[in-house]
Image (tube, rainbow, N blue to C red; front, side):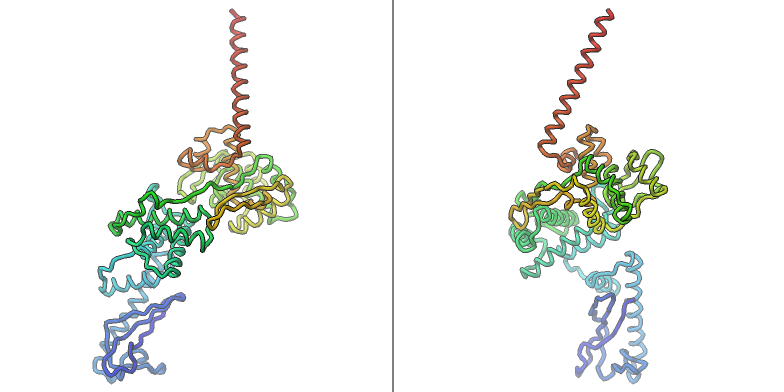
Length: 441
């Protein structure tokens, strides 16, 4: 509940002074000027008085003035309560609450919305579901909203440290150069993290332009680019997945549940946000039928024999999930027990503007997302049509899918070798069939 107090702007003034309303809620404080004035000699500031923070009874207009202050307090509290009800108990920012108060008390002005304020509106409307994805028409996922919040935090920190005002007009190539330098050299972000921030900024600017709030189109220039580099994420081979599946973890139920859930991910291609919430009702006979959390798209996947075996192991249920972060920690404990994951892996990436090469044991790089990437890569290597895999992983273009899967040059060569072998076998069958037809003549 919001806590309301009324104080005078100038307690020692020799004339009427404004009455200020202080609003406190959940660690936030708002100073809001009422339209009321009173001479300090008529103001009651003794806590023991029944008219505390109101006009003294000696003032002729006190009853009417105090009723107006009571009404202001009721209005503020109702407004706060209504906002919580309408936004799933998410508290309003001070700026947002001030806007609501201005509208309620008819003080709305035509103040121009600037970039930071509009960015916050994007976040708020994405959180409460009133802003939908422009391509799919579906709500924005919580994980996507988190990337918005991170990008806005970076911009606000940049503005504070460089003492520059971020407006729609100021976001030009000079801003782009200074901001990316800040992300790279000060925050030491990797190239793809820098690119993600720029991508989000361009998204916000595009939406602001469509609404007529932004008229600077510098962000559309070729040099205002979203930088990216190919990531070196790992995948597990079928043999490595099999070894993890066969680890004896009966003495550690925590690792056993994490391992079993991960194996389900390896055989479904689902994201952790999906395979961690699988329920018995999602298993419809020989198929898994679920709506993906991130995209809101339905997907149907055949139940792999290993998945069915795990479900039976848990008496028709599925392993109970824990947080993504904890699961990632425990997965490394599981991977450390698999001898095939003791191989060295070198990752190359750009961080802080410098090329970095770091060596790891393969088990150190295990995450929940490794399961999905392993599914896609192994199915591709097995010859499953790309379009079929994409129907499950949700990739919209073959180019994006091929960038997602992880194949080494040697694996590409082996895949070509496999196609040659299959082609040769096919030709032999055709030759035998033709020979048989000639004999029958």
